[in-house]
Amino acid sequence: MYRFLLSRQWVILTLLSLVLIPTMVELGFWQLHRHERRVALNQVIADSLAAKPVPAESLTAPGAEVDRDHLYRRVTARGSFDASDEVVVRRRTNADDEVGYHVLTPFVLEDGRVLLVNRGWIPSDGPSQTAFPEVPAPPGGELTITGRLMQDQTTEDSGIKNLRGLPDRQIMLINSELEADRLGREVLGGYVDLTDPGPSGDSPQPVPSPEHDSIGNHMAYAVQWWLFAAGVPVGWVVLVRREARERAEKAEREAGAEGAQDTEPAAV
Image 1 (tube, one colour):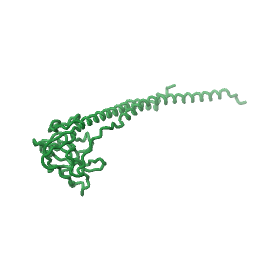
Image 2 (tube, one colour):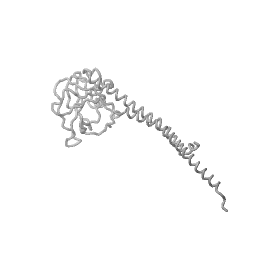
Image 3 (cartoon, rainbow, N blue to C red):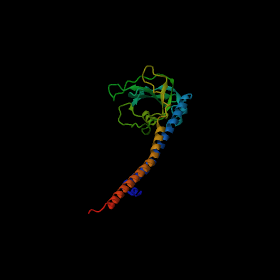
Image 4 (cartoon, rainbow, N blue to C red):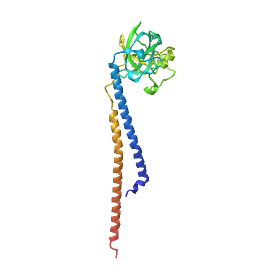
């Protein structure tokens, strides 16, 4: 009755089903892990923003990698801005999704080491994309700043290629190791999104606080993939039973037709 399962068509369909089931289960766990990472990151952000500011030097050092648990932690630093070595980071958006630059200014600490400070967003409405844009000057003199500690940006994490041959004083990624090579100085690992002091005018626009309330749709997608995985064997069984029934009905019709021919009287 089920010998049709050995046909080429049904062998291919069965093998395809056997491949789809573990694939969909794995995709479900992939979405589950993304959900768990999102929830964990939201908690890290919430804890970091709620904590009291600490000196940046207590959480990072030259050549060090910022710990994930310290991501977005509010930190302070005492020193002065060095606008002469300031650069802009290309292809960055503001809260309204407008494309422009982030302004990255070295902040020289009292001991001579450097902390990279992202002062915020400026528009790319200059005369050309190759000319250095007009950037508002940072506060002068010695001062104390406060900001959110961030990890170094990499192509692997951000998806942004570190292009070569860019115009002078323009970069693609904020990376302390690369900036240490450019500056020829000791640079603390990671960087800081500046929150205080704010700009004297409307520019640069401060980097918005990170969103940490939404958990996204990853859990829903995980359940969806698992339902798909459960539906594959159910669908396979339904198709098999329908095929067997149709073949049985066809066989009965053919047998009935042959029987009718056998019972017809012979022509005189």
